[in-house]
Length: 110
Image (cartoon, rainbow, N blue to C red; front, side, top):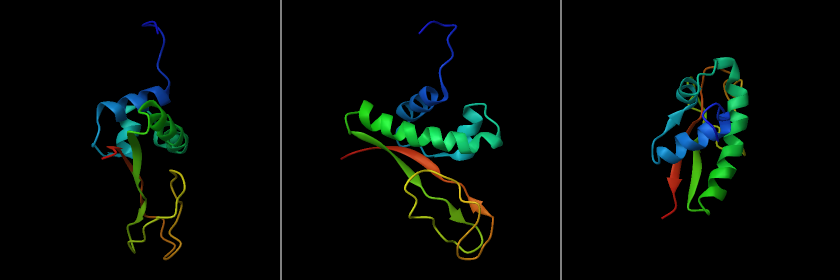
């Protein structure tokens, strides 16, 4: 890759996670590191879903991307049943829209 070529968001994400194993990143921290706006959060979550698969493949299954699920600030409901990274719009229990976004961490298998 020449110096003039810009890395894709997914390439940058892979670099962030592989260079910082065991460090938990919130969605907002990742948006800041990648110089993205808050409106880009949905696309970033889509990229994170793809990056999770890439990391598993790149490390031969030795490392994986784990997600701390979103949590309702009002009632404490944890969105445990999410199959992929996403940001719920409101809590199914109390209908609050005050949701803590998911965070992500690269973990190595023991």
